[in-house]
Every structure is written in C-alpha cells, then in structure tokens.
Amino acid sequence: MNRRDFGAGLALAASSGVALSQATSSRPSASPHSASQTATPGKIGLALGAGSARGFAHIGVLKALDEAGFKADVVAGTSAGSLVGVFYAAGFTPWQMEEVALKMRDVEVADFSSASKRGMFAGEALQKLVNDFVKGAPMERLKLPFAAVASNLKTGENVTLRTGDTGAAVRASCSIPGVFVPAVIGGVELVDGSLVSPLPVKAARLLGADFVIGVDVGSKPSNNIHSGLYEVLLQSFEIMGRSISALEAQTADFMIRPDTLRFVSTDFSARKDLIQAGYEAGLKAVGELRARLGTRGKRRG
Picture 1 (cartoon, helix red, strand yellow):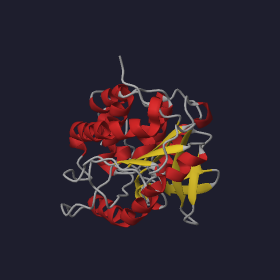
Picture 2 (tube, rainbow, N blue to C red):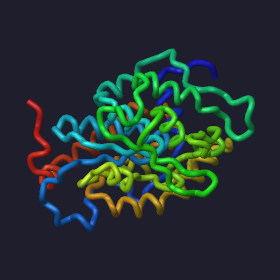
Picture 3 (tube, helix red, strand yellow):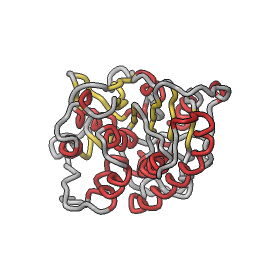
Picture 4 (cartoon, helix red, strand yellow):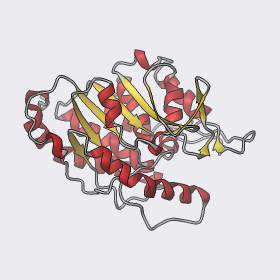
C-alpha cells in the first residue's frame, strides 16, 4: 500500500478505534439526568465517539446540525471522532469534510512499520496528514477548543490531550493496539482512546461545555467478521467498548445515534452511505434540540 485517496485516509484513521453503545436506534435521546433542563446553556460541546468506518457518520450529523444553525463552542473526540473533531475545530465546514472524505486523491495515508513489531503502521503519516490540514497549528490555536482522548498504555489511565502537536494528539487517539505503533507524547506511550473513553463527554466538559451533545456512531458488534487479524481486533474492540459507551452516554445532555447497524465496521467503501445515515439522524434530532436549546438553533435563510 503506497498511495490512497484521502477518503481512504480518513477511513484508515477511523479504523483505529471502535467502541460501541448498546443503543443502535437513529432516534436522538436526552440523558435522564438532564431531561428537565430547559435553560439555554452558556457553551455547547460536541462529544464525538469512536466507531471505526462508522466514524464517517459524524460528518453527516454535523451537516444537519449546521444547517439548523447549531454551532458548537468546544469539541472533544475519541479515535475516529478525534479525526472528524479536529477538522471541525480547525474551522472546516461539514461540506468541506465530506468533499475531503469522498473526492480528494493521491495523499499518503499509510506508513507500514518495518522497524517495529508493535504495530502494522507507524502512524507518522496520519500525524503529518492532520498537521498539513491544520497548517501546523497546535491544539490551543485551533479556532475552537479541542481535546483528543487517548489511553496511557502503561497505566491504563485516560489522557485528555488539549495542547501541543495537533497531529500527534489525533494519532495517539487513533492508535489501536496492534494496528498502529503506540504514539509517544512527553515520554508516555499512548494508544487508542476508546479503551478508556469511547464517548468523550467528560473531555467536552473539561473544555467548558455546559450542554454536551454526544454522537455515538457505534452499533452492536456485527457477526460478519472475517478471518484476518485486523477484523478480529476491531470486533474485539466493539465487544469491549459497548458497556463503557453506554455508561458515558448517560452523562451527556443529549444523544444522537445514527443507525449504523447495517454497516460493517471495516467497510470503508460505505463512507457516502454512512455520511447520509448521520445526516438523517441529525435531522431527526433538530426538533428536540430546538426545544431544549431555544434560540441557539436557527434555520438558515
């Protein structure tokens, strides 16, 4: 593998983390603890969850929210969610993200690691890819406050990255063990954030969000697995992340869950359909969000 289209680049990065909620309906739902809240919050935060190829659904959700006039003030992402989230925080519109995902070609996205037995890919290409698109801006200089969630490989602790090298943070958040060589930031080895926080609601609140919209693009594990190591790894992460994601969803103020059940987590060729699934779920969420957020969401034109 030497060259891929950029859509495949997003797919590769999205593949580096899968953590799924037990709920698979595309219908939005508010968390129980916040159902009675009606006051307009000071800051709206997005918590974009992990989801392998299903991470493309995040783009569709963002399109629907943008059309309805909902603009987030802060954004946190885990794994696939960190990749989409960093583009949002850097000021890319959802339509620009979609164009990048579907049309752009001839970008280096994969770097096989020949010098390490700790992962198939080194991850440096992903880091460079992100930094090229954000023009080298560190995380603290993006247009919106942004956080990428990773896991400390040695201690198993949650590491919420909020400053420093933007590409390195996304690389760390996406470094699924066995697929990517662990990323190293500040002398600490970091791996995929979905191990500890597949739906980064807490990270969004650390950024100052008063009202957190969680986007869970996951689904229950598919029975359609193949014999390859890659598919087995992703299936294992799906199984492992279900209960964690469900618990984190309870702490969000509002949840959007695209219907991704029909998509296999390794099917990156379905990215157009996944974006559409996210868009449809976002449209269904708009009415309730307006009821909850009042004037924060206004129709365009």
